[in-house]
Image (cartoon, rainbow, N blue to C red; front, side, top):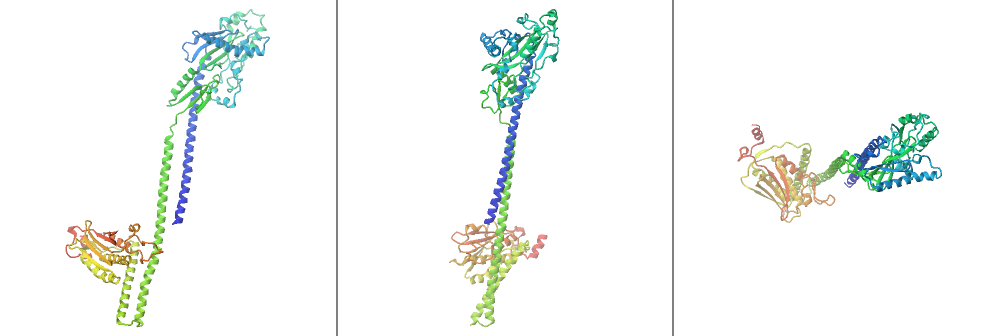
Length: 626
């Protein structure tokens, strides 16, 4: 059994380890799937933000050049102001804006436009300084950027802005009064310079990834200016040229005015004169507007959106850098826990069920193997005990028979003693053989009981009279107590006799060391029926063996130190024979010492019972058939 336990323990550990690995892999796959879903959801939300910004840019870039500053009313709340910076550096701001904003814009223009130009050409500034100046976005992007930051904005929003390029807007020749007196380009001398769209090379800025500045309009502007300068001698067609003049407009580019304010600026070239037009955006309001529009459409409760600079998005699970011209903005997301609890619960539930089924199956298998091994061990002990029990009476019978044959009995009294011994051992051998045969019959399904109806009084008295000498020969006294007027029961005569013989033999074996050598046979009426009980005054049965006394081949005590003889069939056959008659068997330790086995016979209904005499088996069968 020890090896069996070790084998089952190792098998259980192997199954548990495999199940644990399987469940762990399933849970890890579920977590990875949920993480991928969260990343996909975050990417979709970021794309929605890019679409909103792209739609805003598209609307602004379609705005007419001539009434740029007048379009503030009715615009988004995050647009604080619109401004224009002329070629001479004059700053114009939309109405109702504080003076400090104009000063900030002038300082920004000086820092981003005038100073870089002075550093490049301090002695001979170009004819139009603003047109020749690199775009503010290029100057801002000269700062070092990491590859990660550049790759972060390669998303759908950036791809949608690929078509943002320089465009020609017909009929926008007179933009501002400050440009009315500027030198005009002789479009008749170079008719294809502005009229044909192919003459203007599209800007590659919008197709580049963030971190690569859009190409400014300075080169194209200076080329156009030079074309105009080469034809200043011919001004006869100026009136027609004014009608055909068009504005060349670059896409909006981004820059930062201060920590809380963004700028969107575009370069406009009209008749060789350039100016900057732009918007002043409140970063906090822009972030709130974007978060509200995207968050309300997402329908995700608990979604947290942060929009601002890199410090504002610290601590968020997902970060995104917007595409040009909003590359100064960062977005951070904190998603609520996705609804994946059902999958995890299903895995855990199935794992629990699998573990429970496996544990029950292993335990049942272990119990089956253990019972089979114990039964095989008891059967082996039974074979050894039967061999011994058969050999002992045969040896005695042979010895005393040979002594009688050879005339070795010294007296007549000894001859009678030898004869009694031979008879007793023969009876003992017969009982053992009967038990073995009964066990074999029970293994094959048992023989059919021949039940009789009637009182047990007469049968019990006859059997007790037969067993009295047998008990006295072993040094015991069999006492019989029968309650009068017992009700009728069903019983089998042979089975009842074999039950009482086995009970007496069992009592003699286990109570032979008792001082009180009485065996009390009691027949009485109880609430359950008629009870037949045999009690000895021996040491009783150990508490651990009391529930197993009716098992086949079970014998109390250790097989190596056992002093009591027996095969382990006696009480097992008692219960089997009792159940065959419809009775039940039980055993208990009696207070004050001793062991008692009880057989309870159910009482027959009054109309079926014979009140006085026993009914023969054949008559009983005929009555049952009737």
